[in-house]
Image 1: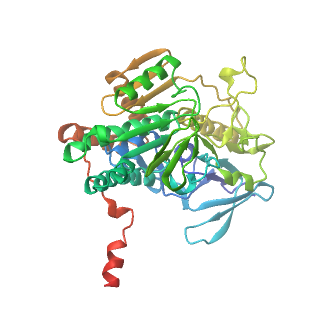
Image 2 (image 1 turned 90 degrees about the vertical axis):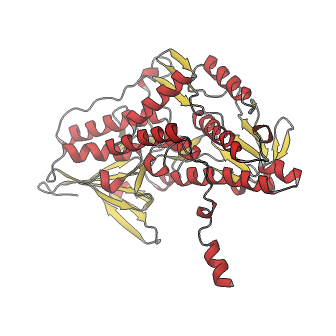
Image 3 (image 1 turned 180 degrees about the vertical axis):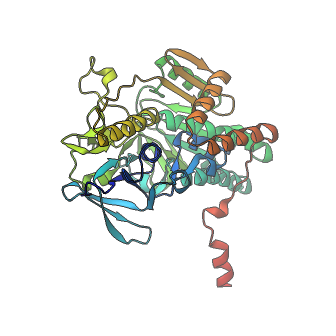
Length: 440
């Protein structure tokens, strides 16, 4: 533990929205003699995930949807490493760097902001065939993958292979899955103008959702509208249907439908970062850290938690359900980060902390260029207005003026000169040509 004259050692696990914004506020409000702040994350940047579908579709430059941690957190220590264990009894966290070298970090105050990972199911073939969309690397890969499949389809005369190459399947009809499907379909449909042998009717796009509706983030009426809007674009929407198997690219659905596909994008939910199981912190039945409404971990006042990895009471629903917790969403993460930083500073200075209370404002979603849906505080919109609201809201939440400006410039250039639809397939295997040259 730090002595009375030593700065308090604050260790933040995770450099996502919660981790980065908490550190950003701490570095601006705390003096160097008050505290030292260290942020640990496997990536040297924060990814603004709501913009990943647009990055995958080529509407924005992928580098512009991430904020470099070292550039933003100039008064913090940034460590690029993966957390492997948390031993709060010893006030120690074990981390592993990219070279596989482990080390232990001590702390006085701990902030758990490890976020979430894709929630996978034991479906045969899913691990081998599935593609996620939670990182900028996956967005780049998915964009190149879709365009590469179109290139391959244009070069083959085999009708069955061509059908398989142009079959694009998305699993999960929530906000992330629906928006990813809509943006990529919009991009691929635009790209067909450059292919003599591929038309929009040649491609098959499918959305598979186990529930009876999609987009639970918006009202049921807007969810029905979204399904109709997708179907009008030729997209097949399977409701009350789940994926049973996808071995060797052969998809089998619960309603008996079968087809071959080379593209399976998985967006069927998230779960708390599994590294929390290697900790002595209290977890709920879903593997999330149990937190109070003041964002402190239950029974451990010197540990704070927020975001997707935490079970924070949802006070806006307390009368309906006393056990309700905040849903894993960017909306809660943004506001929890702000309240956590305020409370942590107040606690360090001996002041009272405040409970986190936020009533869900609704959602906005983009469904391709000039298309979207919005349901915000009861105000419902669709089409161009909803698309504009979607872009306006998310660019306002994008951290740093630098990134805001770059994204607006990307949109402006795309409007003036149309979107780029070139595949950079060599990124998927950058050493292939070098190996061939070496072998010859």
